[in-house]
Amino acid sequence: MPIQVKLNDRIASVKILNQNENLLEIKVDDRIYKVDLMHNDDGLFSILENNHSHNISLVPSAKPKTYTAYTLYQSYDLEVIDAEARYIRNRGEGALSQSEKKITAPMPGKIVKVLVEEGQEVNKGDNAVIISAMKMESEYKAAADGTIKKVHVSDGDTVDANQVLIEIE
Image (cartoon, rainbow, N blue to C red; front, side):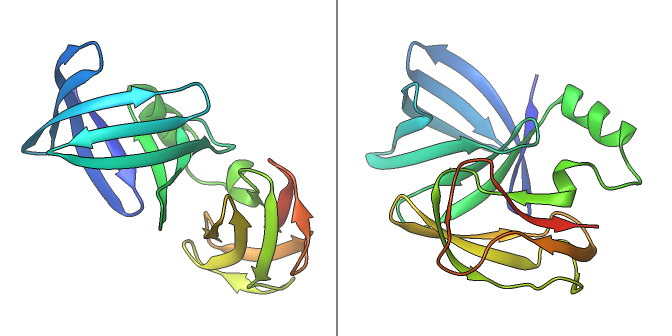
């Protein structure tokens, strides 16, 4: 059965057609890929596809089935949307969930720039803070419309994994 994967603003239907150990045949929307996928326990993936190597670090976020995917030059918000995730999402529509009210650091890092201030109105998707981690800078966005309730960090601060950076109400 296919699942949906949301990568930033794009939603794709993904289905594993065939698997033989680490060799997979995957259908993404209407396109079929043959890949060699290696995974270690640290959330690091090495993917070989059509003689191209892709290294990806997948870091879980506070929300179930959501991750930040880091490549050498970019980061992506990723969400696995299966039957369970659709049920949870539909059940909780309306008010902001606890995870949407807070922006947290996915891993230890350093605050490069706080882009919002307390009392500021933000829209879903507005950039709120830039963090440097693992030699990469990543922008973290407001998960929902609201008002910045509290900013817990300043430019240059060192942060721990899962530390609350910004609260939205």
